[in-house]
Length: 334
Image 1 (tube, rainbow, N blue to C red):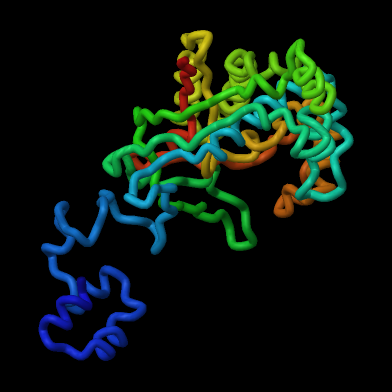
Image 2: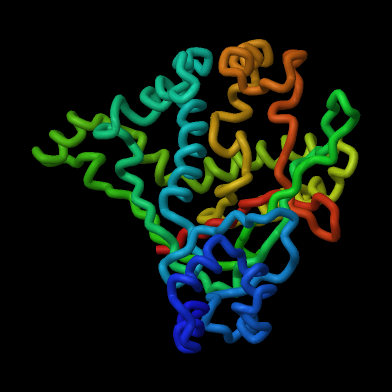
């Protein structure tokens, strides 16, 4: 638009490009290349607008389709479901959580092979197919300020002020629809081909894990909610976020058989992507993992049993850390 206007006014293209290169929107407005009308709601320059003034120069964007509509990738939802199934499977198989890989990047690989299968071709999650969600309207995007809590960390100069990050998030109450499918053909049957499939893949009774996903999720998420409530209740300023988890516990208790809660996406933390509290049941063993993988490089004086991680990302409401990110309710419908 800026270039089109300049060319229509007879200005030299090369000079205009040289003048506006590297300019931000505020710079273009101040220099007169854009006008106040360009920032109106019906302006063709922008697909959507967000209220508020960012704390930093950049805003972490939500994932969107080519039309600027936000959605949840199937890989994000499936990753969250995989974590739930991994924890549930570890409990069923009584897996030895004390034998991780030496590589930090592949620490969970021996466990995942034991639970899901020896390689991607024999992975149980081949049978769980999760699509991208349908898009939401751009008006469902809001800018939220995310605070690393607790903020004040001791430094040689005193106590720091913490860190605020601005991110695009879906508004509370947004509804999205995705497809979750279990491919039953991978579990074999009482036919020559079915028996061959079962012999090759060896999934056996693990079909029940997928069918029982909602129940397993409710049980495991209940423990996570309780742990988060305890952590936040013990911190100065953590009351609003602790109250959020108290309400979430009530929601969990009212869910139907085909419903469960799960936390996914950016800023949801270590617990949502690992074996979490299962690792922490052995305080001494877990502390060795923290040291071996350098998971807490800024805290060299850690002791077994101390909270890990020591901070959470919480959305600010009324200038107070108030709630975590990423909690959704999943309802399975045929």
